[in-house]
Length: 421
Image (cartoon, rainbow, N blue to C red):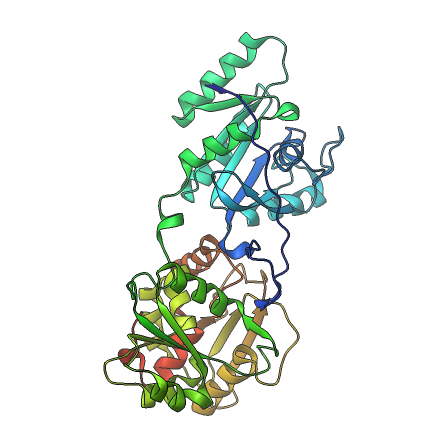
């Protein structure tokens, strides 16, 4: 069992990205929640979860009260932690909440586990049955768990016996601390040891490019990307290419010819907006690889093989089929919207107006998918990988084919086999 040592104050960073749109005036330190490490704080009511979050952030983020059930909806706090980088914490309602409202709060707590990369489980009572039940649920979701004993008893031997039980049942050390006097570095170091190996290893383009490769980006120029802004997938992709020391050139679809002519050699890779896949495919140099921002995110966050396999199920749709289109962003419908307008129009042109299309946004994803024959998801730039894969696993479990925007368009345009992912 570990006890606290010295503190390292966290650096708090504001966020200004919303709905997948990134302004050029944003700070270099700003990081979208989608690429932050998601850490959920779980435990019974009054176990010290909110106090723990306030101690970590050095701010009064969550309301602390002796009244059980003070935390209702999850409290979200994005920040920078020394040794971990950009993270986002979720302070959740106690999983032992009671009554009709309490059950609704517990449902929200369960929803947080769908996007949790790592969990902190706070113990305080001698009876640990509730906590161990949730520990098993978290481990079943392959979520690393840091167990913290909120030291509140004067008799060290009493809680030492319980901590020993926890360590035997979990097979891991328990961090012992009074959360009111928390040493942040203890939590950071414990989380670093539990950090999932794939969290920092995977990149958006690393499997396709090498240092000094020339990459051409064909950017969308429609009302989804207002003047002076780029949408979030492009911002993240550009940063990823820079990290791989690539040479980046950008153009819009109407200047593609001029861009290719201006280059001294064909680009190693062309990344395009999925909506102009056919145009770019027709004009690209034979030796240049082709993909889209949406396809890259399908691999980066989802299950690319399942998405490709599922795309073939588009041929099995009929005029009576029911299609679910899921967007991560929440925004008012726009005339050129790819998910709400263009893809439904493509499907109905092929199968008729009788084909039913249901559109959901944000976290409003159906708990049961049997009402649908096919699912098409956006690139999910606003979701973290854990949450996207939760949705994929739900579709797999219920036997519903699921793909994403870019792969669906490439398949319907007959060029899926000619793009790289």
